[in-house]
Image 1: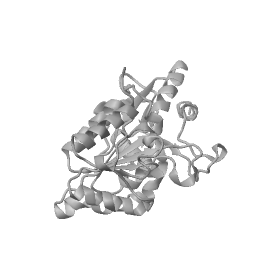
Image 2 (image 1 turned 45 degrees about the horizontal axis):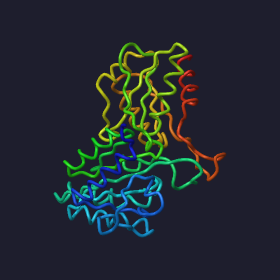
Image 3 (image 1 turned 90 degrees about the vertical axis):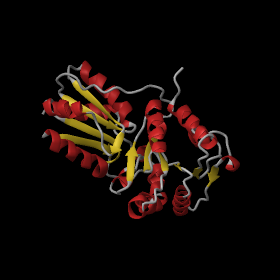
Image 4 (image 1 turned 120 degrees about the vertical axis):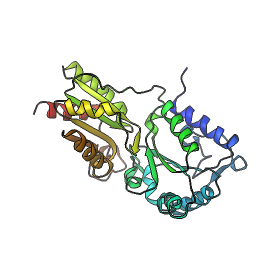
Length: 302
């Protein structure tokens, strides 16, 4: 039976601690749940370091570990906490190699989640890191993707911001792009929206539309197959770029890049421009398949 994303992360971290002699830092790592079951049941003597609840200090401690070549993994349990956790990562660790020729590799696990958790913790916030030099950003949603990016990190000397999502932890399947033939519209998906576009594609194709899909793993540097640009260029209506972050960030920036290469309209969908509350009636959730279908039909029927 195929391993889930959860099991894959847990295995890689256990190996990182035991075989690579690395370190793992974060808050409440050994509490009930072990960060959604993604951590092995290990403790400080094994390299699992519990940080205090002084959020801003954590990044500095992790940066110090990276300067000692301990290959730290920094677990940020909710991506919204990056507003407090990332200053030393982006302002020291990410710049150290360029300024002083002193690599400071950190593997940041930013874990996204929505639904009744209020205005601070929720959703994905990879746009926070996007504008800063010295950082690579990816959003793995499958077991093979996660293994691939971890192995690449261990071969390099860069800061990695790994945008995870708890909604992917049970996933054991790999995604496939659909970039062949003539398409009416292409769906380009990042993070948890990748699951929703698969559902939306089926519904739209049942209605007679020809829909392409491009799954995005690498956000910075932005990477999609060359044929994706060709499919978008030859499509009738261009593409929709979907994300679990606010659109006035990564989404609009990437949409502009694709537009310049294809000369096609690239629409964006993501979090609504509002603050999430702590109840489902006032949540701010990423676009679901029903919303994607509705927006796609509007574009297709114009």
